[in-house]
Image (cartoon, rainbow, N blue to C red; front, side):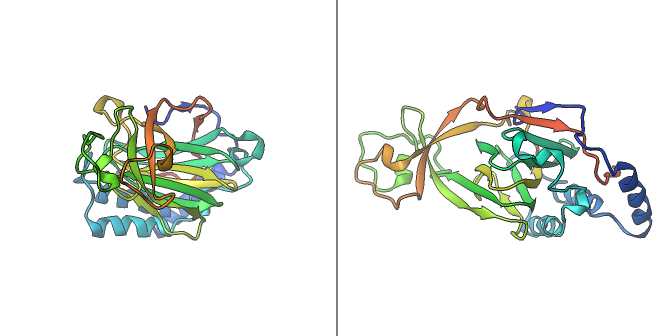
Length: 275
């Protein structure tokens, strides 16, 4: 499932589309637009990548630098757009700029108090840039990615990673990030097995998040979006193991929450010219 995004033909507010297109045509003659530069960079960065294959460090940094330089104006976003009204919560709007087998580019529009529940990104490298607003991000990685089949048994564990799975479906995860981000924050990056592959977004104010996924979700290929419940480590303590409070948590797979609604609407900002 692609995060359960529902398609809606209404753009909510199409004002400025003609003038935006007109301005884009004039600017293109002089220099490449920020959105076009992002697209061209993504093509280069993900050209030789696929599920579980991470771009080289220099390419990761190159794409992050492009995203760091993009502002809300570059993608035609404003906090006073209908997508961000308080009364719209918990509905989240998704604007897709581009998608292919290699990568996708989109913007999540979150009204205040809305939440994107804890979910994963199987085999993906993901770049997230907050364009405006204040967002709390809490993310995790599995406590032991090298031995996903570990289970608690009769042997006495010596560390949390020695007991990474339980027979009841709980699996141990280590907290990667638990803090607030603003538009001045650098682009956050997560990887297939590290960097906070499972995360939850909570909008403290109206927020717009520019997201690049490489590769995007694909149910037929087994890359579906899995959601999780989170339980404190202390709720299911492990014998002979003690951890700092808040350092670890138990996660358990769940269906997509019924109150989690993402509606896809047309993107009316500066367009990408596909080459």
